[in-house]
Image 1 (cartoon, each protein chain N blue to C red):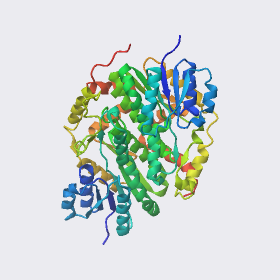
Image 2: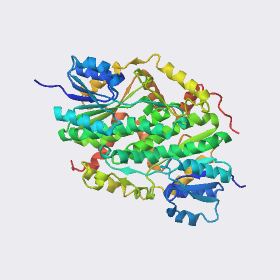
Image 3: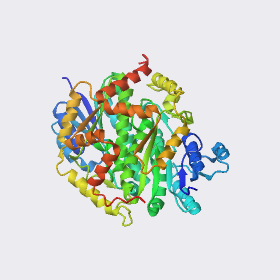
Image 4: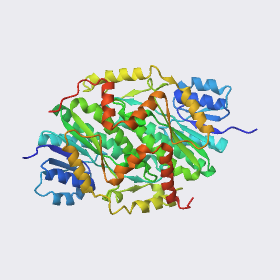
Amino acid sequence: MTRGPVALITGATSGFGLETAKLLAGKGFQVYAGFRSPQKLGALKELEKNLPLKSLYLDVAKPASVTKAVASILKKEKRIDLLVNNAGFVVAGFLEDLSCQDLKDQFDTNVVGLLRVTRAVAPAMRERRKGLIINMGSISGRVVFPGIAAYAASKFAVRSLTEGLRQELAPFGVGVCEIAPGSFATQVVSSTRFGQGVRSQDSPYRPYIAAVEKRVAASFKYAAPASVVAKLILRIAQGPAPKPVYIAGTDAKIMDFLKWLLPDAWLEFLFMGFFRWSRFPRRE
Amino acid sequence: MENLSVALVTGCSTGIGLETSLLLAQRGYRVFATMRDLRKAGTLRQRAKGLPLEILALDVDKPAAAAQVAASILKKAGRIDILVNNAGWGSFGALEEFTDDEIMAQYETNVFGLMRVTKAVLPAMRAQRSGRILHIGSLAGKMTFAGIGLYCSSKYAVEALTEGLRMELRPFNIETAVVEPGSIRTPFKANRRKSRIFSQGKSAHQKVLANILHFGNNPSPLAPGPAQVAKVVLSALSSGRMAVRYSVGLDAFWFPILRWFLPDFAYDFLLKRMYRRFTGGAL
């Protein structure tokens, strides 16, 4: 019996991760779905019943869990063909309202976590001179929205890491690419963590927080389903050499185009109006 | 006329920080030049004789240090008008081979440290309803080069923080911008920290990394020096309204333009070609 390609997906309890795990398993991939909190395992356990899918504990912020999970896959399957670095979350709040720990936690999961899993998986891929790593970036990795700039910083870093890994692993036959989605119907909003000072009465940004929240809610109103990104991942995994970047979602495509087209100051002006920033201070 | 603006510059023991703090002081700014290790203050102290420049110790990696320095400046000068976030360093190695500690150390200074100092001066700037914050970013914040990928990712993050702070601080009349030098003749390369695995000669990318290092250690003699960066900082600070980014050097000017009009696949092709030069049949 020939077994399908082996895929490891991090952060697979909901959203892009869950949809991707479901779709790939349905197409014959041997899917290993990484999860952090056992309480959220419901949907994965259901899928495990009749698909070639196995959930395993992999918290990207816990180094030991990463090495253990990857070692157990390699022991059983002898290979990993596809790694989807999907685990991530959003720390929201104006930068001054965030504690240094908030910023660190954001990077620890979204950036260092991605490198941890990659570090564990890449040697096996290099050895076989075959493999594909898909990093989940974001439109926030190209365009910065006020109020989630810490998240943007982490996704900017992911964009850079993808570019770097792509060059460094290409001679070994390992492909690396980034998917940069816009707003999709995932758990990203409900799993968002607010920074230390955001809810404080003394936050100097109180008048602006509401405007940002309204904007975020509006952007998810017409969000496409997460399965769109899952299909994209399947297409990349089954296709020839991956492109460097895939922008997913109409909103993301428009933003990316505007960022490319407009001078920095114009885009900024557009955003400030977009977020209904209260009166701009006049220069003295 | 005397310029009474108070400026805080980090990372002033060498290179861009040293030149910037001196130039600002020469132009009449009251400068507080900080560095991690005061034993390295010799050059600056000597060149700053007679200038309105004071040297303070500040390790941006230390949680409470920035707030203490900001408080002491406010006590002495009553205000802080300008912050130049310059302190930073670069790591060298393959991305898949850095340990967690090495990765965190890189972000600790270049990203978290930068935010620590920024957060420390913001209350004063908001109270004044004026202020300018300049980050020293890099061409590496716009393009990623193999071998220095981790450093690049920290500078990408600085780009994001600049754009975010710019919009978030606008209502308080505080401006933010980023200066992006390309290859500069500074002691930056001497301060580069190599990944442990590469230093031990055990990297899976050993030969390639060695080639890249060799290439990087011989920068073009045409590359601008740190004094040129200082000039750009000064001109940004004295402009009516700061632009988002200022490039320094020909490479920092042209590469992003190339990146802008080349489609992804062509740019990717170029990068990989460049990289192949370093592999030299080693793989």
